[in-house]
Every structure is written in C-alpha cells, then in structure tokens.
Amino acid sequence: MAAIAAALAKVRYHETELGSEFTEKDLFANGLSGLEGAVVRCDALGASLGIGFGNAKRLLERLNRYGGVTQDEFDAALKEIK
Image 1 (cartoon, rainbow, N blue to C red):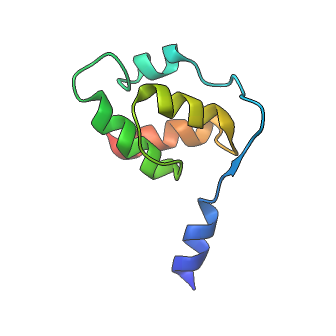
Image 2 (cartoon, rainbow, N blue to C red):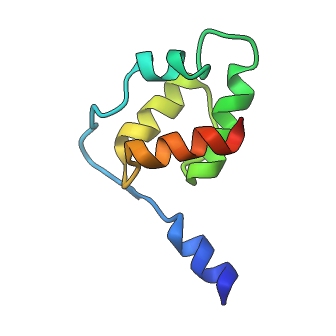
C-alpha cells in the first residue's frame, strides 16, 4: 500500500501550454547544463521528480510542461541528488 501511495505521489500530467517557471539559467546555476556530468545530474533530477530522463533541453521542457513541478520540489530534488 505504501509503495502505491509513493508512486501516485509522483504522478505528473502534461500541460498543453509550455510554462515559464524554469529557465536555462536555473539549469546552468544548478549544474544541470554546460558542465561535465550535467547529463547524469539531469537524469537523476528527472527520476527524482518523476518526469523522465533526458538532456538539459528536454529536462527544461518537462519542468515547464508537466504540471505540478514547483520551485520547492525542484530545490528538494536538487538536494536529494547532490
């Protein structure tokens, strides 16, 4: 039961319009683009947030398109992967 609840807590939905909460500056400032090992960090962050794997461009699109990813969740996931 706990495993099901944990899985459901990570469910995201796809927005039809691209949001703009996260920018390329956010990714660069947090070592998710432009640095060695950024792809590994992007994959880890995507897994932690439940939005999938990909490079920085794909991660940025998913952060802004998948509903429910907040700045607080982003920051908490960054702490988790470091």
